[in-house]
Length: 190
Image (cartoon, rainbow, N blue to C red; front, side, top):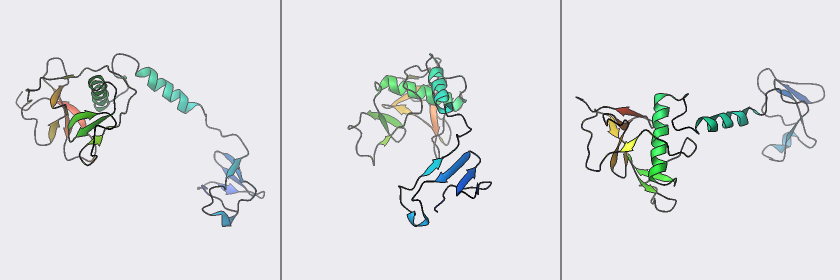
């Protein structure tokens, strides 16, 4: 009999059922060792699973409800709030269309306009579609000054993104990191 997914603490009883921490599972008739690679081999559950089945739905409802206000959800880190505000500005600027960037500049929207993919990278949204944001775009001639060695300003259609109404902090990403690390930073000397 072919048994897969058995981990430490699980065992097989005399009836050929697998006793797991989550319940008792037995192989369906016709499952054998010769069925390796056969996708028709299935396991049947003979006892209900003890963990609640509704928790993924409850989490999704809570996340959706927390994104419905005019500001970012309260449980986010500062980088999470910056990402939430960036996504709101992208939705507002590009009318909820899919967005791609060329390097650090989000300058292309739509499914067919952003080609070739060797030049444009599609952006994957993290949050539910919203247009609320504390960020705004600076005039196209504005340059924020020196931000340091690795921080680079994130742009939308060539324009710098201001993080605050006073326009003292600007949205940056840290170049040279393996992740898309973003934050708000003041220019050096300000």
